[in-house]
Image (cartoon, rainbow, N blue to C red):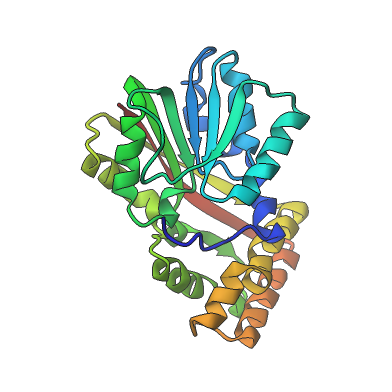
Length: 265
């Protein structure tokens, strides 16, 4: 698997733990049935995974992630919500340790954009999905992100991030490539949709600038930017100040567009 660009700094996990079915997997919600077996690939701290467990109970839910440390948080989150039909394990999406035709639903959120071979990953997700089941993926498309106003300090945010992500084998514009990747992986029944995260209230702007502006100075993203020569610490501080300026603007808005696919196995 490629290097996970973001790591698990609190500025990153603040975004991961915010995610729910409603804000991050609504396109899949209508396909969740009691008794279904579901695999959540790249589950992170398990907030969406635990909601899946409630939706498909008494069905079995398995959450997998490449990082053992974040799975401890996922297990604690599930325990707090008394989700007894859920388990977590370390796994590589390129080589899933499950038999063929195991799950009714296989889901990944913000995973394919980070990995070395998204086509192989989708093929693996298809392999472990039962015939007629659903393979679902939702991915950000950084090239379609918009924000207003546009403080000059933020200008280098995306160019720096693109260099880091692609240098790690990822693809920040994954959202627009999902159908292409799915077809390469052998799917013939692929439904595409798109949805956005939108941030406009003072609280939303403060939080979003904290998670993204913050990781530009205090996370693996910042460390890699400096180590690989994409930015200096002063550059990153300037970008961070730009984020803070955007968040303070009373007319500030930000939209983050995503691509989504539902594929019949």
